Length: 126
Image (cartoon, rainbow, N blue to C red; front, side):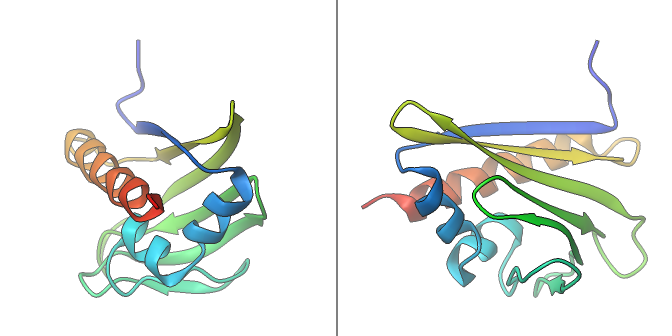
């Protein structure tokens, strides 16, 4: 049985982990994942999108993991988004896990993260 307070989405990207990491932490990749205006910095640095979601980088392990706090808007409760990179053949599997999801929002967030992953994959294409 799945936890209704956790959303997990993954994609395999046809690029090695170092290239996927560079993309994720670039302005283009940050915006693809989190939303327009988001720029991911180092641990403890805030991020904010033009549409409202914002948070702070909680964990920053190059080539392996990025974890950010997530607030849907200024009044939104805190949740946690973890992005893990795993080698997958000649590519990289990126797993996004959103924890502490509010009741009733898991379907919307699954669609959000699925679309975000699609945007990231598209921006990684040569």
